[in-house]
Image (cartoon, rainbow over all chains, first blue to last red; front, side):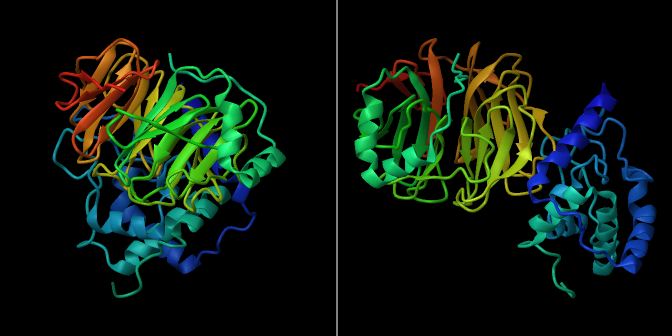
Length: 151
Length: 290
């Protein structure tokens, strides 16, 4: 059942931007991608999974009433957010307002990662999405890009 | 049950163009002469402090809390039926009327003129609309059999955001309740109760466990986590973004739509157009004389 749901989500996600999809994904700097992969493996993989597959049953609250870490790959929803929003979420973290604890759902990494590391890890995540998702995220980021260097 | 399943022929572009050229008032007259079934929608326009109510073919506005109503002319179609109305909280005079066979109509002058905004939509069978709380050019529509679409340019273009139906969305509202990863939340009255998602459409979830079909939903703009819903089991309210629901009294058993005014008045209307108001979150009701 869960497998079916996941397949359905991927299929649905692919449909979402069909009208705007192009065959060409924005090119990503390979050096940036590799450094982002290293940041991911060190700081993100423990919660989001070695392959960005997310925690099991990430769509359901756990015994603490918290949402588990979602996937960052094509099965998740990271691709729905602009660069600016993703950057801020990494810096400040995020708390699901319906969490049954007071903890942040996504911890803040503003004092852990440098701006370059944050840009790099988000760039790495972009390699995990479908072309349609990448195109959607690129559109979302047009008015909401990464903050300029130094901010 | 408030359901508009009638799939009707699309409104021809030529008919609509003629309607707009000839003037909305003249066109509406033809529609108003047909049998108009019960009330299908109620909305509060914060920009003009007026109530809007819609029947399948006619739209009305009240500036005195529902004591008197004036009809608003809209371009109608042979088979089009209004399904939902949404006044934008962010843009004074910005109003959407949608319907099956009618598509999306948008007004920027409080209903004096209307423009069809269907470019990019797969059909004109629109069953719900929500205006963004803080962005006057952003709106969401539900297309029968196709999912939820978003426009960020006043309806000039639309993008599919969610292909699922969430079990049959009957009404959709946008709230600026805190805690969203993006700019707010969408709450949907569905056959499974109330469902919600952040407006990134990241994850739809059941909002509490109503355990019954929901037909309408509204919220208090002064307290964006306070919601009210009409269900098969009566009226309920939530003070925590839909996590828990408390049953309130119902003015009668035929309420089909709700609206909340910033003056802390909750309005409920039944299918026959009888309007009620509550000044205590649905604890007690007074019928509005009309």
